[in-house]
Image (cartoon, rainbow, N blue to C red; front, side, top):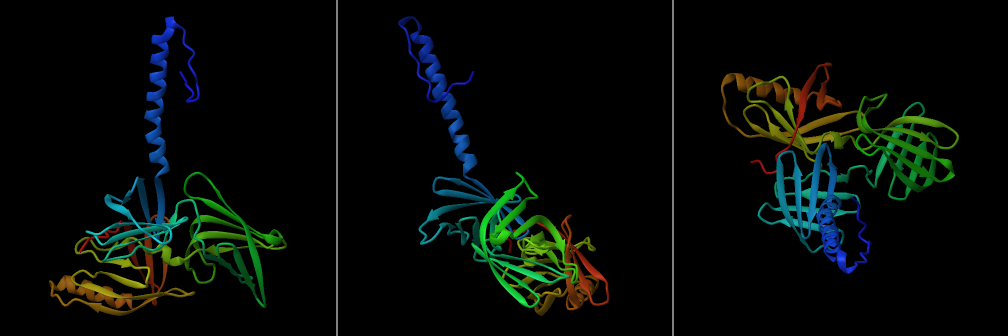
Length: 325
């Protein structure tokens, strides 16, 4: 039986009891449905680098969760967007439009993008011939050999109701960019990107990759696939810092993503002593990290760091504990 919230009951004396029951049923049905609708509207999925994050808003309280971890935050004043905090954890979540930031006093996640949307700023590129399209919220610049052209962004559209999403960006003069979620490898450098790209300027069609390669690395932990005990881990921070556990000691350092690959530098370590086999494993790993020239991310959550001699280090993706010591 379906009852419209706008239905009216015209009751004769003999049917007042039945009408009252029907009216009560209507109120109960609506009250039972309303909280569920509100709850669904308050749930948002984000992609924070390589990590999935969910937020649930209930009045002034926001629950942020990823993996098995959940954190409660309360709304506070913000001059722009909306801001939620947890003072005990030193945690803050801020969002505006489809983008958000989450940080603690120990770590900051990369820029969070609402699932099914694109970053406001991104670039797409390809080879043979070279082309580079740099996009902002409402415009883009197309660079090709010997030429540069400004385009106005007319529309952004999302296809599919679930990942992997496909996006279509329409520009003036008939130009169009189609992006598909999924790891894309540059045809010259082998560099990994988060989107495949197809671009048409109205006269020619080009293919390539798009997005920020850093988003494939950040927001998660990477564990050495070759070890079973005292496993080395690495975490890439959005501000180009890398940290982790080398098998005995903890380390920090810098990483730089270039157009050709990735470089590590300026490592610093704790000074603990461990059994010889652990120290040998650690020394070998740290030496190999200085020889890394490129990286490749795979759809199954595998990361390969390529060495100068052609060998590679293999890591697997795991959820990151933001509040671990």
